[in-house]
Image: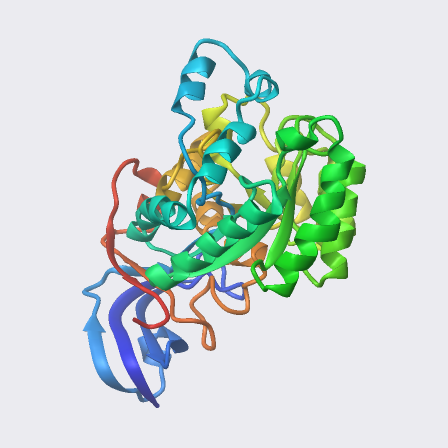
Length: 401
């Protein structure tokens, strides 16, 4: 067997579904040809390999490249002033209803050029890449008009041309009601469904469609209309669900075979069961939980018992989770949600890939998948979850390079 590159003398956390725990291999090798893994496993079981280049990992750990399956990287402006308001006691809902929140960012995003949006998003993306991220989902949702939603999606697409990273874009036109539709939100949903989604789909600007189903967002019926439009144009769906209240959005997402339902602090047992039956991934966002001082935990035990896959994400956004660290996200998930080390690492690799519909492409160290690796200067994988403000990344490999 010939390969372009061989990583030898490594310890592997393969994250493979058919291996227990993290799929650990003590004396491991990873071989790649043309950007794809052709072997990952124990050196003793490897076929004879002739490599053009061999990298001695000197006993370091290799995991799949990290994956952030829920971000809002592309936006204009800052919401630091709202953070100060919350410190003085204002709630997120009160700020939003007073004209702050998402609409505040909308104003700054509409005023920004596409180049401006790319430049600011790259700074946030670089922080994720520096910690081993190889795949990042990026939502629109701060333009809230056809012109500016398309601008945001095009800016997100450009990130992949600027950096060696896989970018998955999601159309989130149903993120908030823009001021021009404040008195008629159903007309805005008409606009999203009849004008925005068809053009986004025809131009190939998004891999999925999302919505914010919440009291300060959109109703269950409005969300259903968005999902029906997405389905009509061949786009899978995902949903911001049950963050501040229980509108049963997760169950609706399950009816449409959604890739994921995200947040889920107020998810009930019926919603858990619906997600389990439909194979919907629960994407948990501990950064937002921490930042808005939420007190109601997602139903972790119920999700575990039902066998619902759990992914983790930064939810990087200007208002409720200005977080650009998957390492800190894992620590928060462990300390705030009591996830195990295995669950945390799976949440930013295998299950994050599943939440994006990419498990066949990345998220585990297995033959046939993209050679996306993170190589760590650690003694054991728990260090990736245990430490705060410390980055032990030794090297990052994307598509074999």
